[in-house]
Image (cartoon, rainbow, N blue to C red):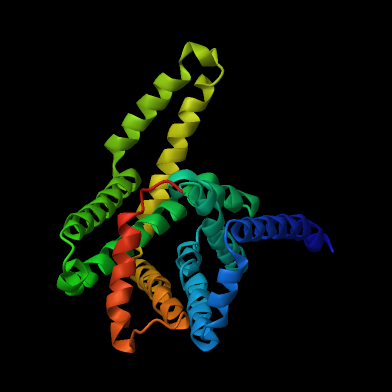
Length: 284
């Protein structure tokens, strides 16, 4: 009953938001046109798309479970890990640049007894693994480069920019997890910021705590990086999860009765990979 009381408000909030979104969608569109489209849907293909969505939702957060296993600090429960991993979808969708998922996940970890620096290290490593997987799938998708850019010269630039941005983000967050020099720069910035007159000296006492927090997060990040078997497994799981996700548009197109064949699945998956990579920094 106690767990039900905790979950019930969240469930009600989710249902209210879902109903509101549905009402807005239907109010902005012609119901007759929506009905005519729905009448032509091939439900079997839509069902396959839903199955792939569920597989994505299982595989995508699973690396967090393996990253959360530790002999020294204790294992994090599988159920807690999967729930915290699933939070990313919701909060990324609410916040600009999809930047809200990770801070809320760190907060959620604290609620199950995980220290903030350890949670930050796990989330940072998970983010880096995600970026590695995205870059890998982008590079793999270049096999279809000629078909992707055929007749559209601007796509060559967009593909290059999308891939470049994701490589830059990967390098940046690897530096955050590994570089002591960057940590010192962050410490100096926070020290300068907290000493501003507007804060009246009230935040100065937190400067050292912030540095200890960053040091702890980097220690966790390095420890996870040294677990090479776990790291490789997590990358594999993330690649599989993202591949399932990038395949979904194919099944939606099939469900809408658009003339495409199974041989087009790799190309459409590659197109989805780059379309998401190119729009990763656009605010929601």
